[in-house]
Every structure is written in C-alpha cells, then in structure tokens.
Length: 351
Image 1: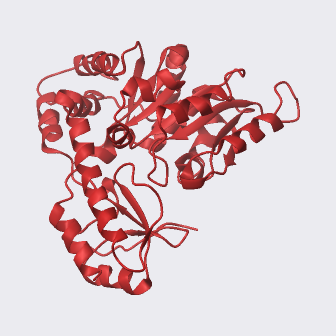
Image 2: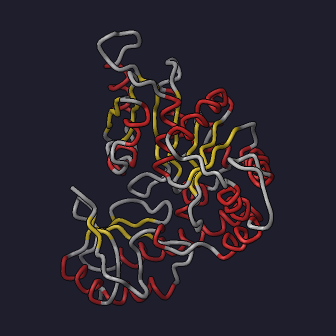
Image 3: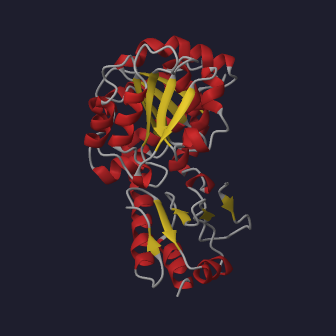
C-alpha cells in the first residue's frame, strides 16, 4: 500500500508534511553569508568545523559528524558502516528504513537483511525484540547475525521513545557485537516533548549513531550522521561510502551553514516547539469532534486520526491537504510555520 496524497495546490491548511514547508529565513540568510568568498571543499571548511564543535557541546561528548542532504542518504550510509552484507538490522515494521526508502539500506549495505518487528504505536515491543534476538543465536551459520537495532524517534506514528525506553531496547543487544542506530528525522520534536537533554536521549541511553534531521524542521536540505564514541572508528569508512555513493557534496559549507544557523541560540528547539504546539492544538480539537478518533499520543508534530469520510471530504473541500495513511487513517503534520489560524480553519471545516 502507498501513502496517497491529495495533490491539489493549497494556499493554506497544508498538513501534508513538514517537508512541504519553506526554509526558515535565518537559514536562508546563513546560506548567503556562506556564499561570500572561497572555502575548502568536501567538509574541510570552517563552518563545518564550527558545527561539529557545537554538536559536541550540545551532545556533551566527543563525536564525528558527516553531512548529507536527505534522510534516506544519511540512514543508508550510516547503516552501511554498522552492518555487514551478511548481517541483520532489527527495526519496527513501520520504520522509514523498511517502508519508505526503496531498499536503500539493503542497497548500501550490500544486502543486509532488515527484520521488521511489531509493536503498538510504531514502538518495538520488548517481547518482540527478545523473541527476535533469541531466534538469532550468535555464531549460528544459517542465520543473519544481529548487528544493528534501529529505532525511530519520533516513530512513524508520531510517538516518542523516552530515554528509559531507548535504554531498555539497547540493553537487549548489548552482549552482541552490534550497534544502536536512531533515525532522528524528527529528533528535535521528540526532544522538546520529552524535556530531556540530547545526550540523555542518545548515547547515554545506548545510541551509537544518530541520523540528525534538520530538513523537516525548517532547513532547505540538511541532515547529519553523528557518530558517538563507540562508532567513531567508522568515520573514514563512512566518508568513503559517502563519496562512492555520490552523496559527498563538494560545497559542503552550504549544508553546514544551515546547521550553523539552526543550532544557534536553540533555534532548532524553538522551531520544533512551534510545530508541536500546533499539532497539540489540532489533536485537541479533533478529539472533540464526534466520530473522530485520534489514534496515537501526540509526542511531536504529527497527528493521526480516523475520520468519517464525510468529515474528510469537508476538510478537502475547504482546501486542506493531508495524507491518507495505509491503515485508513489521516495523517496531519504541522511545521514550524503552521499558523494557529490554519488549525482553527481546519477544525471549523469539520463541523
């Protein structure tokens, strides 16, 4: 099944995705500043170095960072240096790496096996994880050994793993020569809701590699693969694969410049908080409409709701854009620039 979008053009009430939103003006200004004069290529520029230093402060640890322009590229490249072709990657059945990346992780790893696991609200259930690990004994020649556990935060249902939940799952593979990967395309949105530190939600809970997304949170196109200490020795291999895979931008300073502005004065957290606030407003309003069911806790900027067809039609007729999800529900995504009036107009159209 595919996620079918209403493809008409809407002047407002656009809840299709946070990737449809414009970039924040501060990031556009940063690109203009980065455009002055010459700079070293392929990430050897001063802006890239400054962003890496800032990330070390934010995450309270040593790390290495590699910039990319898409979440698929960052996920696939990261997994390629964590999992060999004969290995297995455990992930949720709804995970983006399993459902929405056209086999990129398998392609870049050279054939590693993704093993999808179940769990309510797109969180891997502990029993499911225990079962999968038990069924794949280390050293058994006939099975793909577990080499990566991949968690999405936010999940594909818009829910957030807490630091304790991340740690519980990471502990299940700690006796294996395996890594924990986190798809953080909406990491900022999860972080704002949870109120914890970036360190607590990542390496302190057992995460070894974070794919840190800015694109869904006001960047023009900026992603970062962050290798925490356990995985830092994979950095040269990661760079080599980035180059060989055609994802090493010669003028890397323009990607880094977006992160430079985004991380400055906690703009990234402020923008995520804006989007989360609008999503909470929408979820609260939808829950008050007779016949509408909000299906998951709203831990970030996404709302999933089951709508009567008549109400969904009224929303579309009023000019609202949203995705029809494979399970029949509707997904609404708020962005950094979603206005309170857009939410109110959407809710008004349903009544």
